[in-house]
Amino acid sequence: MSQTEVQLIKSSSVVDGDIVGMSSSKLSGTLPAVSAANLTNIPAANLTGALPAISGANLTGLASGITMTDQWRVTSNFNSGPGVGTITANWEQNDTFSQDVTVGSSMTESSGIFTFPSTGLYLIRFCLNGKATNMQYTGIIIKGTTDNFSSVDENLANNYDSMGSGVDYFAAVVAESFFDVTNTSTHKVKFNINSQNTVAIEGNSGYQRTGVTFIRFGDT
Image 1 (cartoon, rainbow, N blue to C red):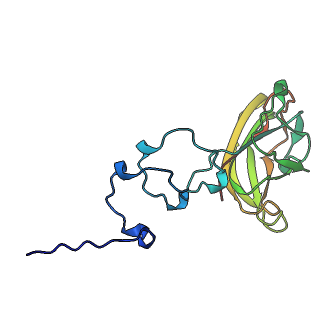
Image 2: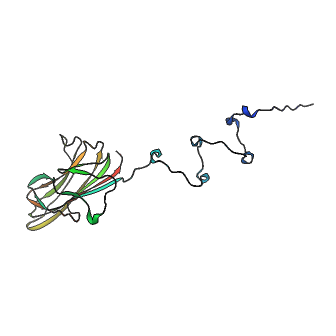
Image 3: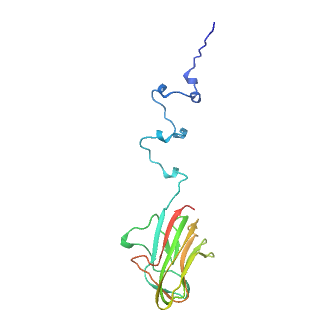
């Protein structure tokens, strides 16, 4: 004769980890609140309804993208050369049609030295338009520093153009560079012109002619 033993289990002694394979039809009543920290590997198909607002501070591993753009220009004509000189005056932000063309925080400028609003990886593009009757060469230089131009004064990029002589010739020169700004107090830039003879630099307050563009495209 066989004997079947039935063991009664008190509900208070059941451990959550011991409950496996329970079908959904056996679940009824009000379930307790569940911490989101304990939910893992949920299929996307099971996520429905409106999601709550998510703080950007909790999102990791996402590319920052372009978070800042700014554009400056020289507002009037001036002569440069012969030799090397820094553009120290007549700078303004692009304000054509009173549009706000700046994304994020603006660059600041003092005596031709530009300070970045935040650390990050930047693209810098310098464009110059000049005129001369005897243009052997005219070049532009993007100068960078990591110590507020105390002793470090490096060429980030340069480019040159040359024309003939005897009549007025125009030249358009463009140089660009990446710059890793790890400290806004020490990492700065300025813009130089290097010409063999005197060149009339063309500026304008109504549109871009001689000027610079700054784009922050990533974190340092």
